Image (cartoon, rainbow, N blue to C red; front, side, top):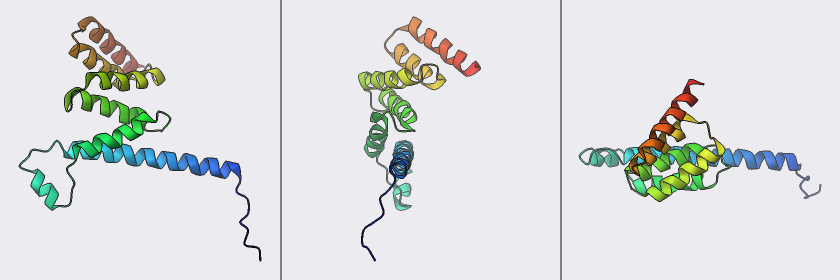
Amino acid sequence: LSSKQPPVDRHVLQLLSTCHRCLASRALTGLGIFYVIVSLVPGSIAPLLRLAGFVVDKERGRRYLDACAVEGNRPRAPLAALVLSLFHLDMQPDVERAGQLLTSVLERHPASGLPLWAASVLAWRHGCIQDAVFLVQRALNACAG
């Protein structure tokens, strides 16, 4: 018997790589959203969550979402970037980072309603009311089909 392994087909390797990327994307996005949401609970409830075994770690959630969003070819990257941009608009204000994330999503998905809506919130925060109204109208048109 030969101890040599049979050669692996490059299509199998490509499929495994795709599956790994998809699984990693799901895990990073899901855990990131989970940690961010759990961090939103009132301080009086947080000890109960910790007692039940939940980890309240907003920064860990941000890091997971960022890891997925940065690699734009991951299947869940647009969702991670959208949630992270809203995180940077409300929870940990970083308007520049929120703008970068929304721009990257809108470059890939220019007619997607949620990123257009989030971009309108960003424009509104900057005081660009005309742009905000235009983006909301585009978002509504995108939702209407």
